Image (cartoon, rainbow, N blue to C red):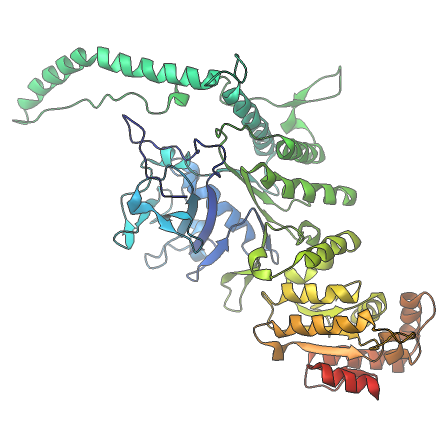
Length: 590
């Protein structure tokens, strides 16, 4: 869309809500944080998508990232100030002041050409930055002037309150917020929907050109302008009389009353009181405030409200403000059977076209790679104790085709914990249940040796390449163990399972450094390679019993696992390292 640097007639305020309902709402593009709490001089860069999942160990800074956007949106209030503890190491150092940069993509009515940059895709981009010089003071806000290529003390959209109304509205829900804060946020979610519906209501039906609310706001705005115009003579008298008194002390000084009408008529009128009370109780019984309910009831009501928001149709007149949900640990207080439903609710929110979601989680269940709108960021402390944020996965970089997405959707259903590899550690992909059981057993038998091992069960040879494509985005080193199978079936036909070897090799070769990926095949399958004959039934259970009771077999399985983790170690008999189909063919032919 062409750039649109417009101003409303008669004032300098600009709405980011497009007039055309087909034009997308503004959205957050990037959040850059440094020198904030445990985040040091090395910036943490969060690339925002419709869904952003922050993973990482406890106390690694994930919640600080959620806090960052909420913080800049509260500038002008006490909540927009920092405390001494928010500065690195609790020390105010002028060379390392807390700084947060926010990049917002806009589509219509941007605040002037000097502020409009562009993303790699050519979308209009506004950059703003906040710097805190000391505790308990408001931050210095700057805008990036693209015409001079530097930060400027003048800012897009002017005053903080006006600027905040032009960005997505944050809804921050902390993991252990007070009952009052949780109740307030649930109420805000529901009231937001109600207010949106009021703003689009038309008493005269669809034939009515403007909504009742728009007509009211227009009337209030006109009234304000008329009042100011009608009192202009009185204003002139006041200016003259005060100026005459002022000149006796300060010769040739005068005053001027800048009595413009209020630019935001919504400040003049609201259909509801500032804070609505949300009550809950049994039908025909006593309804008490939600803040007085138990934590389980409040959390359940939160998910109910979010589900309602996700299923509520967006008004089609372009009047709905964009929102961003900032949610700490959504798995808290959820019954296992409710986790999948909660994940669906979160992933459905962006379908309304007005929501983005950023969560922190320790649960791989809240990662759904079958969607096209998910970014995974791992937040962790390095050896120097500095916080780092690494984008592990973005859909537009994964090169997943439709078959890959179907594979991931099926895998999410079969194994909700498959995404554990995003949480760090050494990764080994295996094809099926038997090898997964074998490696899981030796990991439990030797916990110190394999403490950080993640075994990914692909649940089928065809899914191995899909998982490898995902790992290629962020892991420079991982291992794959699969069955070689035979080139032909017993009937002499081409074996489809053999053909999958090419797909696995292709996925490995697409990595930035394929030599760091350890690719091992079992000739002809895992059972034959380890046990010298395949079990006819209950393969995983039989494998567990045999390995548990046979020390020599334990040693052999450990040898295979060690060879997968270290390319310098030899693979056991019955297995082969390979990086070309000719090698694999030769190994099978022996």
